[in-house]
Structures are given as C-alpha cells and as structure tokens.
Image (cartoon, rainbow, N blue to C red; front, side):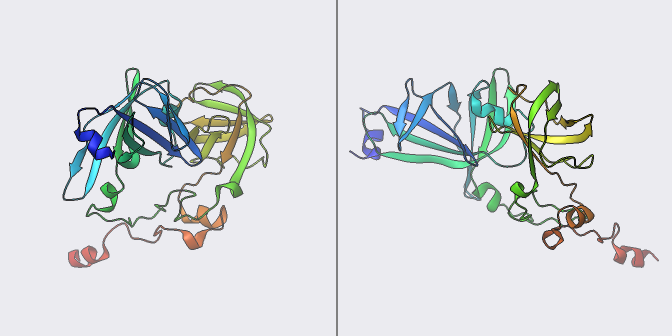
Length: 272
C-alpha cells in the first residue's frame, strides 16, 4: 500500500524522522517511542517536536520550527558560538506498518534559541534565501566571503594546528602542544577552535601564546568540553585585503572593495 493510501485511511500510524547533518557529522532522531530503522540507519527516540509549516507561496519557500531537548548531542552545535557552517535538516514522515515515506522538509537551521530546557530551531528551505528579491553580492570594503567557504576557496586543512585542552576557565581555553605554532598573537582571531572528539566548533575572539601554552578566548563558554580533549585550531581572518594577501596569499579570491569611497563623489560635486 502506498504512503498516500495509508495516510488518508483509518489505519495509519504516522511517525516522523529528523536527520541533522553538518559536514561528516550526523544526528538521527525520531518522535516515535522506540528506535526506528530507516535507510539502513537507526533513528533514536527523543523529545523532539515541530510546529506547522509556514509557506510563502510567492517565494515558493517554507519555514518550520523544531524544538529539541538541550541535552541532545546535536544541541551542542547551536550552543557553542559556532561558525556559520550550516546544520542541514531533513524531516521524513512514514507509517510504522509500511516502508513507503515522504520527505516533509529539507533545509537548514537558520536560527537557534535556548528556551528553558529546550533549544528552539528555526529551519528554512533553501528557496527561502534563493527566491528573495534582495542583492546576493554585497559591495563593501572588507571581504564578505565565509572563511574557507566556496567563494573564499581556502582549504581549512592548510591552516590547521592540533593540540589538547589544558584548562578551561569560562570562555578561555588553554591548549597545550599546539602543532604548527608558535604563530603570532592574533593568528587565530576570528577563526575556529574545534573539539575533534565531539565535532563542536567555537568562534575565536582572541588568541595569544604565553609560557608554552596557547590561549583561546571563545565567543561563548564551550559546552561539554573537558581537559585532555583533542582540539583543532583554524587560522582566522579579519576580512581585510592586506590579510588576504599577506597571511593567506589568496588575494585573487578577495571579495571586498578596499578602495570604495566613503562618500558618493557625485554628491560632493553637486554640493560644490
């Protein structure tokens, strides 16, 4: 029997499956009361719910709000000051008694907010961004590209050092035995510090070296990080053309306009 026939009949037993992915990491959950085998993968039963789909017919896009327990492993991806690398979400709907299914939603997590013991996720379909009538390329002095993104074209593995956590004090993480260092102070500013044991990524606000230890000030206190955890530090960028040229030798992919005037010269001529 097809999904549609069961869905519209009286014997349906619907369940929903939620797949979160970020790079090679994957978190699989279900709203059912027992683990579900689907596409050769196991979806674990957890406290998870979603709201109604909000559709914009003009843009052909949709939004859905998903709530998850803050103790879930995927929740840490939104509570650690992560970088803009997106978390993708796919929601499947099927019935317990049938293998047929539909994809209810496929998109990315656009925003996360801590609400009590839950994390509220605002998820948008790709069309939500692609179909809006807004400029897609911003003209600004500094580079608008995401560091290590497709327009930046730098490979993060070319600018990574590894070490182990020595001590954690609120947002300060002390790292020992950082390979590839010493680099100059500020080298990792606006970069990434990743816990390679958990996959959690944190934004680096400040960095310096002192007495054989490497100090990283993060945007937020790291969640569930421990002493001796392995970490990877990725060089940061302040988006200036001199940094792109001198630090990364990547000026051919620089997306900013450093010589753009602060004032419109035509307006200055009109006022003279």
